[in-house]
Length: 156
Image 1 (cartoon, one colour):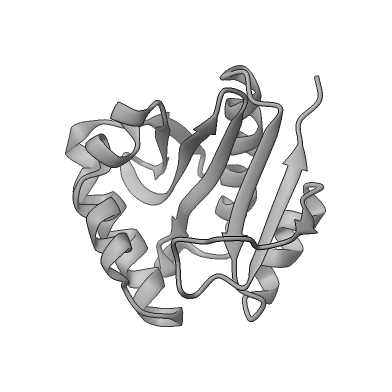
Image 2: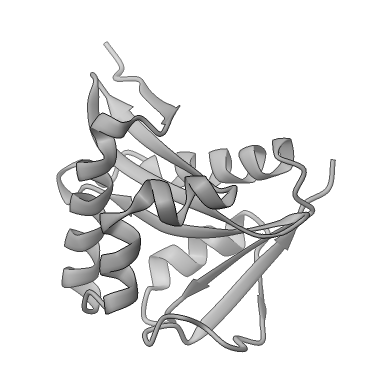
């Protein structure tokens, strides 16, 4: 029997999973910056109350991945804090999350979806490019680790 991964909107009971998944990812590749700690400790305040969204990938009712959309303008969002539990990587969960983020952003009226990343994350950058994200100037990022910014123009 094939296992089905579902993508579900934020529920308060999953807030600790949002923090757990992202801290594990950050500690593996970079460091948890003060801004990350603030965002991860207060997801409702930082994302939802400001017009953003958080979604979770579930497998058999277990949270295995997540991402957030930060509202950055009337018609734009930033794809943020996407992480997949290392024990569940290799199941195309990242692919499902990016695909869902694009659809969700469009449904919320966005015409642009942007993200910040780092050039050493080759697999992630490959995934973003596969979905049509292109590199743009980084500009000012709230993250010290960001050395690349990408965007996708969303069309119907």
